[in-house]
Image (tube, rainbow, N blue to C red; front, side, top):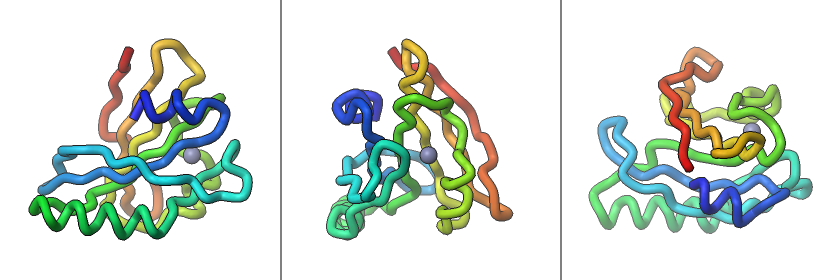
Length: 122
Ligand SMILES: [Zn+2]
């Protein structure tokens, strides 16, 4: 995820998290098709469906999503809160604002993001 975020540099990257029983097994990249990718993300539905098929083939589920904040903190933006509508999904935000990158995990519930834990990745 951090590598993907760095690849996208100034734009937000995005992808899906595959796993089972709340455990993340793998992160799959997706294209960001937002019109203004520097400040938001919109997962390409083709990549979303491909990830669902990949998950099924491996007896996994899509358990959540990730995206990057190239210049802001690893906290959900007000837009993230407004546009997210997958209850009980896991949600990783990679912030490149600091070096090393800050990676935080949230669970979406009760209409908002609840922090689960955070980790710093070199
Ligand atoms: Zn965001």
